[in-house]
Image (tube, rainbow, N blue to C red; front, side, top):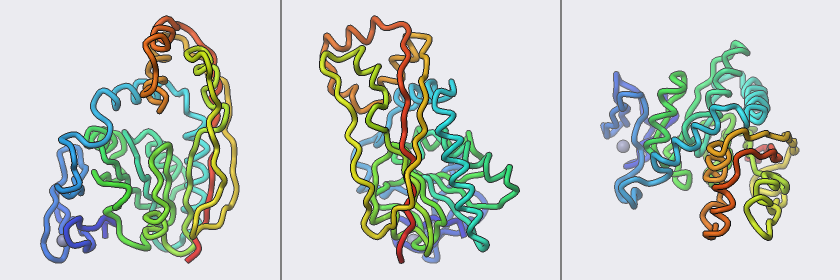
Length: 277
Ligand SMILES: [Zn+2]
């Protein structure tokens, strides 16, 4: 059992050689890097849904410098801890896995703990998933939608979601009894100094109340540090990863282009919820 399900009929997908097949013999071949395409054609609205190549390159260049490593370590430690609670078939889904940066940390923590767990990643971007599959060979990645996860119901011990769209109904469905949803959101002051350097009127992030229907809130942990960006390239890569970059004026962009060095706060909330089913 792979944990993935057929985007055509919903049946469980089993692996046979380099293909995944459902009972009705709908067949999905693994790409050379090892991922599988599970987005139905009618849902692939554009030719390149999700993050494009440029965005994936930008994010990879930034994350690989280790600026967010403390967040990855904390998330991986938490995820491995909850996976260890499952004595039968521990499985984790990273919903909106991007290029596999966080999954690489989780896979490392699972291996260090001497555990066996099935690791699944889903993202809308084929480019990102292709990258993730090369990066973390011990996990299985699929191109798919968070809002219609190609994942079997009651399959996952843990679902993680880091800065990705959230679909609590789908996370509820794929989590098994006692499963845990781990969500990472930016704190109020996340990247505030960066916004101060770019905008005339910077605002703090809004942090929504910790409530999700169908889940019991277990607690929040803050991962906070100052990061020192030593090059203009790092600063601009980070900025392009944020949602702010879509609403930046010409003047703001000019200020951004002139920055060569910056110290800013990186601050995240790691929220844990237990599913109630
Ligand atoms: Zn099928």
